[in-house]
Image: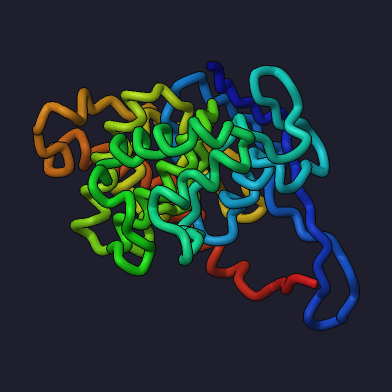
Length: 273
């Protein structure tokens, strides 16, 4: 399994309508993005609202194509969605009429896994995310954190090389969020997936990422990529209270501060068609 990602001078434009003149024009979400994500790396994207973080994830997911440049996975251009990439969103997108196991099996069914193999594999990945014993629960019988675990299990079960995560813990309370951060790191170490993770939380970015890519305000570009050296998050030390954690947090906030101010001035300048 591989999973090396490359953005090569990627620009993405969308059609918009100017609010004042009502004329149709173009909106540049990201411009000239160059970024590599190594196989098995955990990379976090941060940036002000509207800077194009989700656009980059959509490009990786094959949901849209670059206006200029190329997005490559293992050297091949991404031209559409594929089973080599799993996606986890902020909203769980579970089927309410299916159990936890049924939701994971649905993903396996879509991936063409033979029927006889689906139950065992679904149970395996529910166990991986800490939901052994909850296979028969429906989404409404699960907490928000448990529902997100099901969504992660569903994305992992068909063994994608890359896991794309768009603010998956944003809607959760602080305690559940920190617990799932630890769970995600454990899963990442065990599976060796390449992870690209979007967040608005600097603390979450520093805690999870091996590297944190800071984007500029619109149009989004890579301002700087910060390497995070905090040792093994699994050794039980409270890293969030450490001086090193505070130093990384401050560095990323310094990079973001001017971009956030600029983004606030840009708000409401354009509206989608």
